[in-house]
Length: 586
Image (cartoon, rainbow, N blue to C red):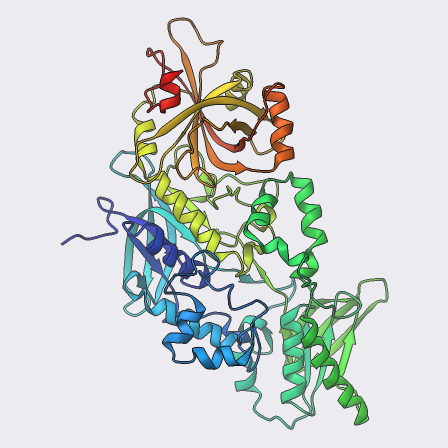
């Protein structure tokens, strides 16, 4: 019997975590690459999603159509409407005329989908370590994942060619604050507060810090359920603010606009993200703000004030004592500090996202990082690693700086999962095998190689679909050194050029033969990266002017961000690749 997960027979994909991101990935794998072997590891005994904030009646902030798959494949059996039909509630759901289901129902949808992938999930699996391992080729082409089976306590090892990290964020806790019975993060709110504070008539003193949706919902919950309680809301700004969810701003969460964000330069990304921050961070849904204000106003009518807003303030410390917790609050604009006493402090302070330095300690030396210490992530969500490590590390929700505000949200899950599965499929396809067999001694100086290809003018672009032989076309290419780590190549496919299979959003190879190579011993430079079709007429026209000022007519642009370069000398005059009919005729 085949035993998957061994070094001799590794999984194609291991996914860490089985929340929305990797459930969407499981759907994409089944629908796009059903021949790939997958395994998902989840610490919990079942699928759980923001359980600490599943407050009764709390609704999603997006349409049910932004489920795990609908925007990618409406015919999928895993859509939210298929879930409603399976539960026997489709007509009643339609009768609600409600685009935003409750969070409780959305979690039930997630569990319904997850249940259909039970055969590829190992629950109660606590991932302890991820390390590179050597494959049959002798290189670091595998991951070794060490897991503790929480049901038995046994240690288990699995091996895979690709790893997809989707463990979510870690609660962000301010400095000088320690979580405990009286200091709770919002992620544990419902599992902690209602059960420990059962006297709903007592005059409780609560404190909440944060200015986003969670802070607003927790404040409303405490005022509504504990009618004699007082809530201190510690805000960094002057007031709670409404989410900017106008349809023009929300277009940033379209697939095409998210893709465009990646190809902006770094300064433009920062400015763009800052201008749209109010669509997601430090804001509360406008209708919910109205509900909270009505609750506060009703208290005013009764002659009491139960919500105390500490605006322009930040939490500096929190120390538990016999009576609850003493909280230090500092005025951000020079108004001094003060101390509050509360029975419970709730931190609605969001999450931080990083690769666990303990879990990944053997792998991190191979990971390329940017100036802020974050992993460098390609368009298809693959982490850039050193050349020695050839297995694929992908991350979900860890690349907001380069992929936009939607990277941590549900809206783009169908498209992201497609990108990852498509990239994994291509990496293991015939293109990789065909090119790997023709790689003699390398030239590793990236700066030298970039300078060589900058003067070539033309190159051979190669692409292949799963199980297909590579298809190539020769075309003019210009290099833009101002974008990406090594630069971005731009070329134009004319009407007579072939439509390369699965080129858009996929990995591709470009081969150059610099004219400065030694006679009789030609040199080739192989460039790999993520390709992207460009249809914007102005951009194509601008590049055409550089490539061929006399060119005109319909054309499709191709961009390829250079992720890796490889120089080689070869006795053969040309690389051995399949040629298109138009090339053979020319």
